[in-house]
Image 1 (cartoon, rainbow, N blue to C red):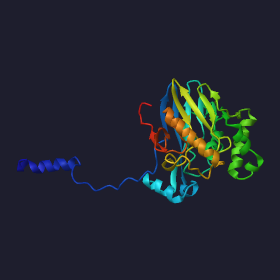
Image 2 (cartoon, helix red, strand yellow):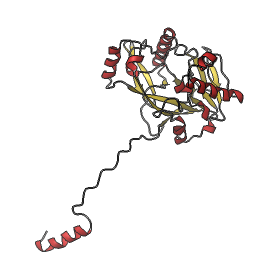
Image 3 (spheres, helix red, strand yellow):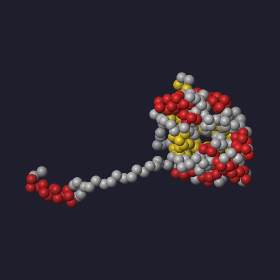
Image 4 (cartoon, rainbow, N blue to C red):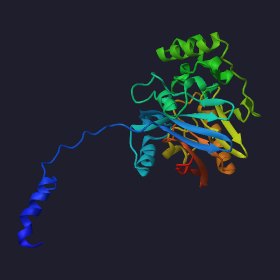
Length: 311
């Protein structure tokens, strides 16, 4: 630049605010995530995964194996204890019916969970639209939010209802009393319809069936959605710690009512999913908790669904 033009150029830069400026303070960290929902197509059905939040679990104390084995498996996966564990629910829109598989915790487990309802709304649905609420089992992180769906019918295996609604069980905790009150509200309006589990499946709505997977609780159930040759199975609590139990399916957890039945139920479901190559949707695998299994030695590899912006 010619020397005679330099003063004018500097004046122009100053006028445009392009010179040195005082540093601004950094913006505050926001400490939050985007709404927790993920959607994909299953034949003619639309599946929406809903995140209820997470729970910190001392899995080294909960899993029924030596703690060093659990810690090694977690370290191998770059994880530690307590393990931040997803709580997921799933919405099935068949085109004519809307079915919610599990409902999250509501207010039963503290501030890090209880977000199913907010995420359902963020995903574009309203609780009044839900026709059927189907519960894999009556633990609070699966049925806790069931009271938010005023037009739905509540469905679950009669074995679970009979066990968890027995007076001696209800009397054990405030959480049990709250769950019993939710079920009573459905029953009082004729909307509580437990079913007798069948290995042939119990139809909830066309294309959605319940199948027994007893052991984790007396009436623990899986649900299956099928459309146009595509299939997804919703597992409930056949999985708690993916880094351990996919490699060692026989490992049970303290939450299992009957570990001797829970382990073979888990192993059967894993083997069937790997052989069939269909999707599974899992309550306690990192959100959205949807993927497939592939046999790897005596265990399984977990292959998460490939993210798609086009469902």
